[in-house]
Image (cartoon, rainbow, N blue to C red; front, side, top):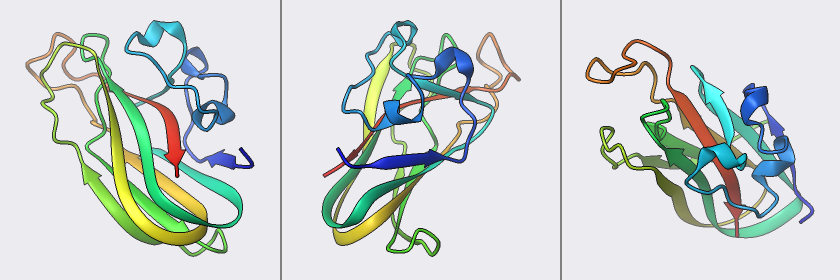
Length: 154
């Protein structure tokens, strides 16, 4: 697809989704995280920059996330998208807040999507971790997981 990605966060070797390119390969993770399609981050936020290779028109940016709270996986609190033409100076263009309940025990997959209309080369994706597992959960006090798969740029 001509894109490259650099990830500032450190994913778990156990949940690598095939490495950095697994986030931009067009293959979506399924609701069952055990199948290996998700990249997992515990106790940290997610940040990555996608290089489109040249300045291109972009109409939509999205990132897919999994929530499956029994095994400690929550949607991010919010996702921010920023753009740049030089890869250094970024301008925030969208923030998508999570509007899903944090106490739903069924596995859910959701795209945090923004419709835009820009010409750009670099796109930064930042996802704010849910954080510490709340007191009502059996694993209260532990660090939650953030599972991402597929950054979509159209």
